[in-house]
Image (cartoon, chains in turn blue, orange):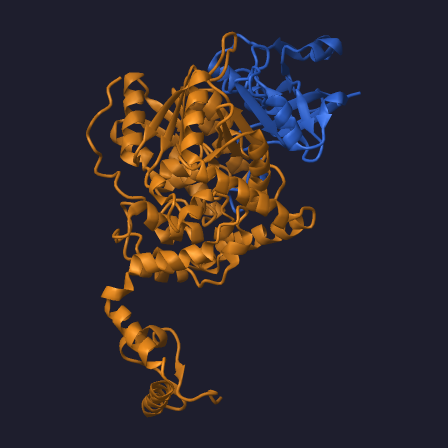
Length: 152
Length: 473
């Protein structure tokens, strides 16, 4: 993050995050750390005010090996917009959460009769658009850069 | 909540109200546009190349067969699946509205915006809202509507209609986009390069996301078993639309429902493969109700508007398979007609082979704006080959032609019947051939006929007819 010029990180409130002591490490590197839910206004969450180089840090509940897809579930500690409102996105993925196919990931996430998250996002890469001249360009709306750190 | 009863003058058919000229005239104009031709060629070739790359890794035929079976069963069970979806969305805390037509859907959404005191509406890409002309209805009600998909925003600034279902602005050059952005921003301080333009749009549209009270999205699939709405995208704007404003309105064509997650998983795999030639879209948003207790982002209200708009009447007809469509846009890219004239020529948000079939079906056979659309095809069959849900598009095009031309009553129809009778007997068949050869010889100059009368003029308008076979030269 320091290399990318990140000055603030917004972390999902997740045990995985705390287990590895990420917040302390980031603070030690001089990066401002906020834990979701944050008390920022909508303009600041959207990057219109405050620092520009902000990194959202998420913890996927699952990931799909075949397609490189992350499964992000919304919850009080995990905002729906964490991975798209900020310019950078880092996902901390415990290795045992990786499944082979999309069907398996969805079958595990959506079980009829069990609580289903209000929003689930399947994320397979940084934001891009091919709307200008049919050439893929990064950073249309969501994160310009996406890093997945697999925790083994 | 009060729903205004006024039926807007604009919400009649599917085709656009601001069409210029006839389909034939628009085709001629499009064919003469070299910029359009170059951009369409680039887009079509890029799609074909990516398809070829991807098909090496997957058994596309097998995937298509399964997708076809899933979608056919969905359409067969449509009433039950819709009832189940409706119940499950309500159980999740959402509001469900069934609209018989576009006007009704627009009335509901305008009424909702008024009741909630909304001023700014942020939209993500949705063909259903194009079809029901929702932007016009919202603007008529004094609301500011902002398209946030990059391509759709460019078109909104240019006051144009999309040329492709998922790549709406591919007919435009970067220079034109830069000019539009400068005009919108009221400054010349807009970069010329692609990255700069994308970054500029990102920040301009973030301002709108900060203001918007309603986010309006389409729906790629509704999953009946859990009441989840699937919204597929690459840019991330649909996520912002569905998470930042306090109200989310999702507009869904009634056929876009699947039974369960096993089916949804397969369709969600097939869709990006056919649409962009990759095995995953960047973002798939799976929304099961509004914000829950303790959550600090996401909408407080979720409204699902399910639009019939002529779809229900297609069940049980020879056109039922058209309802299987998942709007990937593959048939457009594959179509030699679309590749030459672009989507805007069709005059409907749905262009290409699927647009040529469904536009007149949704509008009714007598509609002058769409009656001729089934003829925008050479019947080469490419669309049928690439359709990821196995819709027999060439067959449907032929049936749509029969439906819209009702040949028995027209002069052409009588001509064809006489022809058919003549060619049923050897003698009269021979006679017509001899007569035709003689007529061509008499009319021909230097081996070629340059002008023919009557229906033959359609041929000689664009090419000469040899006066004997084989033509010499």
